Length: 342
Ligand SMILES: *Cc1c(COP(=O)(O)O)cnc(C)c1O
Image 1 (tube, helix red, strand yellow):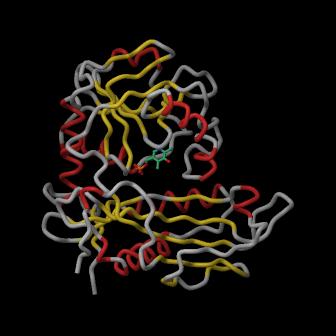
Image 2 (cartoon, rainbow, N blue to C red):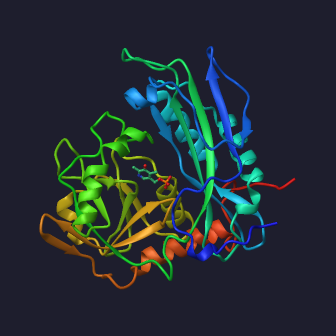
């Protein structure tokens, strides 16, 4: 039985649901996956995560489709990305098999909290892994905890997507050959200062440039960027320090293979941004946030789509991708992973 919750008015915040999946790494191996009712974690005061930020995470959603199935969207890509994040941080890898087992079990255990179709709400799933063993000399920890928690969250935009105003940041997000392409907690710790200050100045997000030359667009703090050219080509920046967003990769696929549009993944210079007609930020939370204005150091780049409505191409991409996610439009093979209640 689905819980009786005012789904439409939920925000994006933590709630401790009855169950979480937990797996511990000790003595050189991962133990058995368990479901736990304990929302607290007890670790050493000298844990690797507390001293040297050895942690990474993922984010995905479970929701109810139009025909009543409970699904997650391309979780194999989240599992693969977490595996890659672990490798880069010297965390014993959370395997895709562990990831999928935790996902199926934690959603099933909390199934009453999966919001119904049409509510706009979703069950947000947060997998994460961190060094729990004590370290004081700089080194990887010898013990780790993998947890997967979930919580119902409200619709990102109540009453349709509204264009946002963003700024070109003076701070850098990720160095070339650094950790920009993995979902490490440390990438977020160091972005908080820039994001708090941008919000205080009235911007919804920062857009970061490539630190080496500060001439090319990289991405936002937690979302990849797409642009639309005058002739309707969908363009996304190419760089080794961009986090490979599942949403952005899906949007580029949808544009090319379902909508028959031209797509390009290539370097995008800041200088050419005023030539684009639409812009959007892609991530699991909002799917696509249309961008109306980019402030480049006091000079506003205003996209022709304006601040009232998303541009037509962004709107079409949004409708098609959310249509696939909700089961209204047939999904490419393997995109929807169904979670079957017992
Ligand atoms: C998580 C994240 C994204 C969005 O990725 P999705 O898989 O689409 O949710 C984009 N950029 C950064 C830096 C991220 O951490």
